[in-house]
Structure formats: C-alpha cells, structure tokens
Image (cartoon, rainbow, N blue to C red; front, side, top):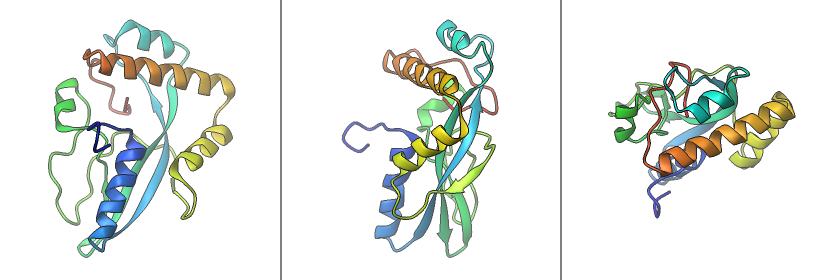
Length: 162
C-alpha cells in the first residue's frame, strides 16, 4: 500500500488498523456484503458483467474505538476518486463516523486471529454461488484494468463501490 500508493479496501484498512494500534487506539476490522450496480453510462464491459443483476462483493472498513466514541472509518477511495463520483472521506473528525464506500447488506467483525483475506474468501464461498463469484472476479478485473488505464468509470450508483 505504501510502496505503490494504492491498495484494496482490505489492505488499506489492515494498514490503518496497524497504524492506529501504534498510537494506542483499538479498532475492529469489519466486513460486509454488498451489491454493485454500475450506472447507465458506465463502461460497456462493466454493464455487460452486471447485465444479470448486481455484482456481489465483500467490503472492509474499520470501527475505531476512539476516546470520543466508536466511529466507522472507510479509507477506501483517495480524494481524487471524488471526481469519478466515488464516495470519499475528506476529513477525519474524532468520534464521527465516515461515509462507507458501499451500502452494507450484512456486516461482521473480522475474527481476531483470522486474516482478512481468509475471512473474506470464506464469506464469499458461504454467501454466494460459483456463478456470482465468477462474475465478481471478472468485474473486479475489468474495474482494475479501467483504473490502471486511467479511464475512471462513470459515477457509481449510491449503493456501489467499485
């Protein structure tokens, strides 16, 4: 994350959790299911992958147990992603929850001692069919290629987080 200045929701929140722990702050890594629906006008490859319905995924965020109270923190999107219509959190206000990068369907704390990738993989297998997971993987690859090519997707619908 630091070397390449990019990462997934999982890697960014694991790093943030470690940094907060170094400052003496406890936090809980969270996982939630979500459905992604690209808006009309999104790149054709994304629209085609979502033609059979929303694309499923697992998103990660943190609950920071701050002295001012628990606060939901989502560091998924950099500030520059706001121009693509993605939900960014430009400020950190102690004790105030931030906007999530998705609309959670179900949420769980990642169990201590279980890696976030392993927990995420287990949830995906338990909650979704092989066909849904295949579409998810293809969608994530397509989004990654778009971002790497510098062609930011059209703004997502309010429940989406690419």
